[in-house]
Amino acid sequence: MTDRMFLYIDILGFGDMVKSGYDIASIYRHIDHLNVHGDEHFRCIVFSDTILVYAHEAWMKYPDKGLMWLIEFAQDFVYRLIPSDVHIRAYITIGDFEHYQLEHVEAYYGGALVECYEREKKIKSTGLFLDSRLARLSTIFKVTPFDDKSYYVHILQELSGISWEYESYPIKGWIIESQGMEWQTAYALRFLKNTYDHANDIALPEAVRLKHQNAWKMISILHPGLTRRLAEAKFDFGKVVELDWTEPMRRIGTPDGFFG
Image (tube, rainbow, N blue to C red):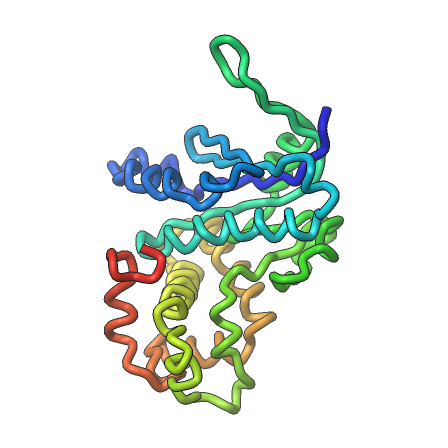
């Protein structure tokens, strides 16, 4: 068996979407265009609501870089799903995994797959999580402890540009507009609103609300002033970052949107 860096992604609520007649094909179109498919050093396996991505064993010599790429692959999928308000729970670990082609079927199995499957189901949250053994290797993406075995990975990097002390808001929009960052930041802000709305929607099952509540809690640990101000402003983004958000928000999920 070969040790590899391994990413496991679960699309949440997939069964309910199938039953409700949701356009599942649209999700698969996103999967089909993920940037992981353009990297020969990583392989992607898809079945039903699960996506597996593993790194070539050569990346074991550079685990920090291999981890960065796996996080970016998960980040890519999250941003593509933001317009449709579909969420994932994902887990990254390191362990043995084999994948090869037989005459009629593909074989894939190993400890890393079993660990991710069992661990991911126990995490009551949305988002991307990291095996605690790998936390020190995340030098690009910030991480926050979630429990004794995993860390929450902060993939909404655009929030750093508008994350200030609570007393500093509202902040001027030119801070991000001068860098052309309003287009990317709109997606991150939409994600925050979606998460907050679900966390507080009493019409949703308690278990579903809890997942979004925990995600909101994790994000708020890194961005306490921003999340507090957004909630107080009822997500009137212009009252938090003084910018006309009409066009950046309109573009989300359109061909003109930053993430398509």
